[in-house]
Amino acid sequence: MRILLVNHEFTITGASTVFLRLATHLHAQGHDLTVYPCNPADGPIKPRYAELGIAVEDTCALTGFDLVIANTVCAAPVVLQTAPHLKTIWFLHETEIGLNILLQTPQHARAFELAAAVIYQTEYQRDVYRSFTYQLDQGKFHIIANGIDPAPPNLPNVPGKIRSLRIVQVGSVEPRKRPGDLIRAVAYAGMDAELVICGKYYELDEQARAMVDASPETYRLTGEIVPPEALAWMASADIYALVSGSESQPISVLEAATLARPLLLTDLPAYRGIFSHGRNCLLFPPGHVELLALTLRMYAASPRLRDEMGTNAQRTARNYSGVAFFERFDALIRIVNGQ
Image (cartoon, rainbow, N blue to C red; front, side, top):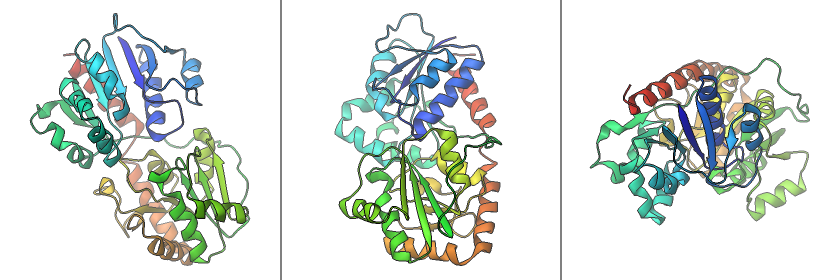
């Protein structure tokens, strides 16, 4: 089957990483793939497609394709162009952020109507967009949870700890991920701890930036790094934190859980039914830096609690395998193609 993959960008994000894994699987299945990027700017993901032998085209005629798979809400304008002519699957990764984008460009919401199928990761994500979709055929909306493979046995080496406790967050340094909250919480907690944030740098508030500059032995911003290196930093962590204000189903949380890292997460609706406080993670309200600092201190004070939460998180992550993700995606492709 000839498939056009509409990729939102080539930076390393959860959405772009999941899409590359999907492309790798589809390529191995024998499909003929072409990638069309919404944002043609180069990034670390782009050469990975070339390594697979998948062409990346900045312009693309629609003739000759059997199927389109469009990634993220940012691909809505392309869905509007392709869906009237080709069966198009729209693969959404955003919750509130995506809703805000569509509210700013409401004409793009017609992509829900035109797409042959729409994929969410969670029921909550379905609820976020329900005002755009409640009058449509609900059979076109599918939930396919993200899936991951076990961590490879040989991860790259990363620098050893210089403090007794290492906290790691993987995600772009930008307002939605709220890295400034984590930087301040580490300072307020008063622990012998270091913080590593792995992800492309976009923006950091002035106070947090000054704290990082003043204490480089406490705070390390790695910048954009390849997934194996990010996994290595996660594996070295005593605590894996993701303090975002909004998420759908972040792949980094599942990866850290697979590594049996104790999770410290914001109490977001997307985690409901998956991660719950005191069962397989610790949660705190988004943006509440004082409670974040206190929760960090709780983990720091109890190695037993860290072990328990890490073990339970790993048990949860086993329900989200890469094999299951690909099987569900393959089944949806067959449905869309009437097989």
